[in-house]
Image (tube, rainbow, N blue to C red; front, side, top):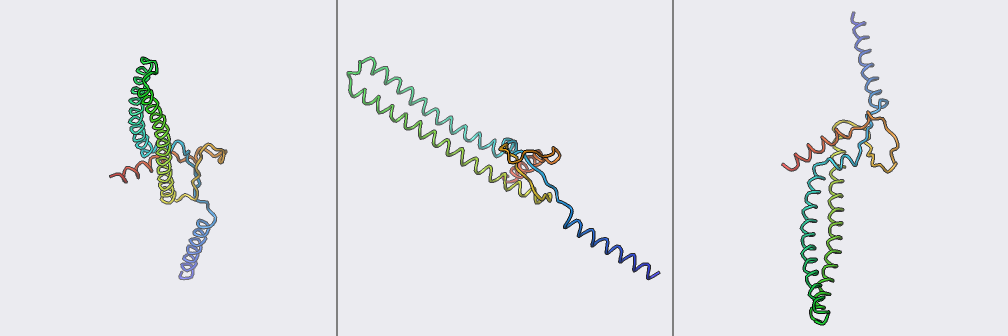
Length: 176
């Protein structure tokens, strides 16, 4: 009886070692992908930054609109004097130059702010996706961005919705 018991224990131990080896070295861990544009668009941080940028752009546009209105008023005055008032013409030209410079500066600032926000959002998405992959034991998570780098994957490998839920929960926790 002891011999049979020893054989059973040995067989169980051997099976456990074989199972561990197969699991560790031969069984593939999950591979998946996310649709990056969808993740970016549905990430709460993206939505918040979009609102912040919109507020800044609207404030800047209000300044431009006010300057444009002032310039039109000066243009009417210059027209009314037939361009004889050189001081008024000078004020008009100065106001026009300032308006053009301000428009250019605001456009550059808007572009720089958008790029800064996008970089911050992408960095956060990347970190949260890495955390998700580690937590759920993925071997690889690909990012499908529509550039053709991933031409095909089975739909069952798409974890976009799960990642969106995960990163938004993580982000919500970060803000609290």
